[in-house]
Image (tube, rainbow, N blue to C red; front, side):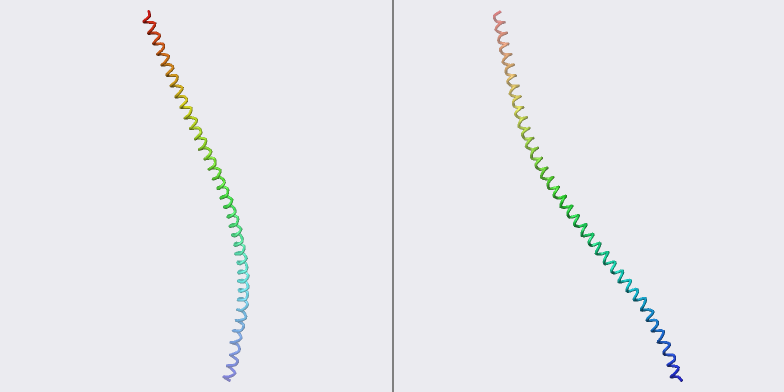
Length: 132
């Protein structure tokens, strides 16, 4: 009877284990399915973020190139205007120097004429006084 007791006790112990395994398999399969689904969603989001980043980077590169071109044009324009101002100031300086020289010569001539006139007037006065 010991044999029959062992046999009788054996099947009930192995049956719950099989039942437990099949019960555990269902939650594991559902977890695997959830994880696979979650993984697919994450991969889709990552790909979307990569695309967004690439688009953003492309737009940024375009904008930077545009700004560089604009700055380059502004620099060229500024250099041309600075050169023009230098040229105009040089011409102005030359003109002012010429005018200053002309005024100086005119003042000298006026001064000499005044002095020459004074000398003539003085000579005339002296001659008149001597004659009188």
